[in-house]
Length: 113
Length: 117
Image (cartoon, rainbow over all chains, first blue to last red; front, side, top):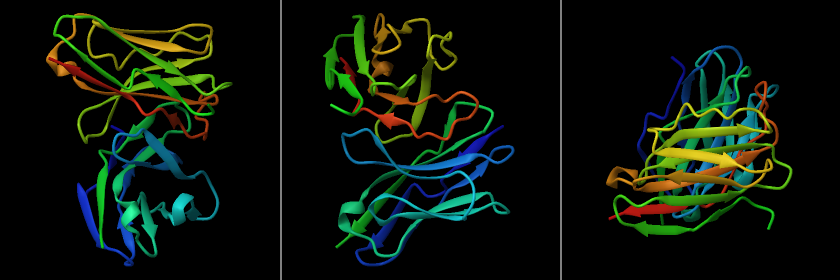
């Protein structure tokens, strides 16, 4: 069965430190990969996507993600965390032959001053 | 506005009542999705509309749930005879065509927070 795993329910990082939010997937073929962020009482906002090409993709708010095909991972990263980055982050994957996104369970990111 | 609009933003109702939730997608977006999100949890897919094609209703949890999309634009999600377990945030998203595995992201509204007393 196709699935997306975000192994950490919560990640705590000190402001100014680098952050990583992990995502691995089990989807056939060469899927499209997405990251979304959700702030309290808001809908999800698109951050970035991987379609093809360079394994490192850059997105909004200084975030980037690294695609690793052999490890079937798509970890979200940021070199220097801000308190305002505190939010819920979702990884999602789409099989290229399907319209449906397969969602991870989300990771709560807490950035401490 | 340019974004996905959902109304109402909050809805409190008594168990057994019917509720209607509205979604106004981004103009020109042919794909529309409804999701349910329990407090602080992940997304549960409910239903998908693509243009004039028959909707994918495979995620609807029971026959008390239904949705329609009129004129390829506004969508209404209806829950009949509401139960307490229906309490959640209902999110709507739209995108340009998602057929054949399109790479376009989904754009979300801020959701309707439904509370069943």
